[in-house]
Length: 189
Image 1 (tube, rainbow, N blue to C red):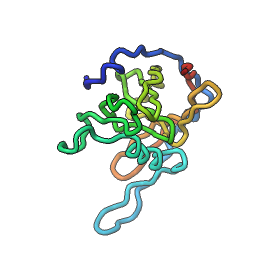
Image 2: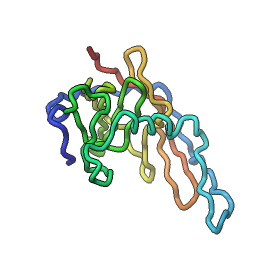
Image 3: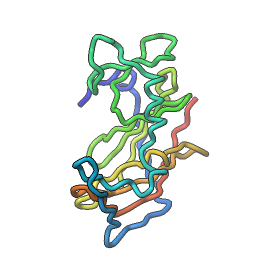
């Protein structure tokens, strides 16, 4: 288990239930073939819904809000990161490299175990706002599930996101399920 800041280790985790708002199961799975050969390599099949997938902007913004505690160490998963806007200069975390950030918020995602996921919300100053855990959707044999980052948003007291179960045999992409989910967002001060 990764070492955590004292604040994060002592913060209670609120366990919530996930609500399924919609679900598509593809039988047979949707298959997107890898592309043609380019430069001696075959292209891997692209995400058919890139507007829902990887959120490069919010991932990149985390580099504005957090920096390695020491410049003497090569940045990596096991080092401490400090919050640039922390007025105390004492708040720090170990990054999961599964964060999404915007001007006011840092969201950190971590598998608690094979069945659960924990989402931690920080203010841009590094103040821990809450930790919430929920049961991940049931696994589908042969497929890996995950949050579609660009769909992740908190509004009206809930956290909304899509979850996709897929795999990549070779250069192809196989999609078995896509779900629209929400969990209640804990109250923050």
